[in-house]
Image 1 (cartoon, helix red, strand yellow):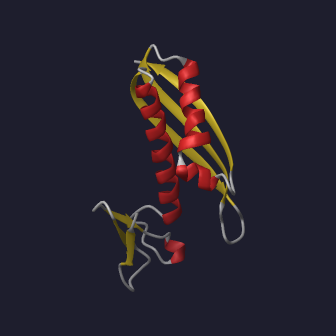
Image 2: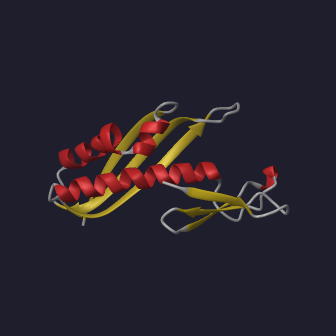
Amino acid sequence: MDVKVSWNGPSGMSFRAQTGSGHMVAMDGAPEGGGHNLAPRPMEMVLIGTGGCAAYDVVLILKRGREDVRGCDVTLQAERAETDPKVFTKINFHFVVTGRNLKPAAVERAVQLSHDKYCSASAMLAKTAEMTHSIEIVED
């Protein structure tokens, strides 16, 4: 896997990234750090990737289990260390899974499997952060 991150120049702290799969992503810093607040912060991108990884796993596991899943949202709330490096110290994942006749045990199992076995991003972040999750099931 390859990515290239390039600084956009001396007028701020924005960066563009090109992924090996051919996609472009913008990042920017906070105004107090010289940025212009035009795109997500790099550490927000870490959370975005982790949420995407976990939601992907949950949907795939539920589909493979023949559950009638219709939607999956995950909200991540994170705390960071006060001193550099300001690693994540706590992350809560709140899953809202929508579907028809979803079995709560199947949804819980999918979330647990993502956390314990499949999500590479959360496995890395678990080295510094206490991970918790909650689940809400919505009938569609």
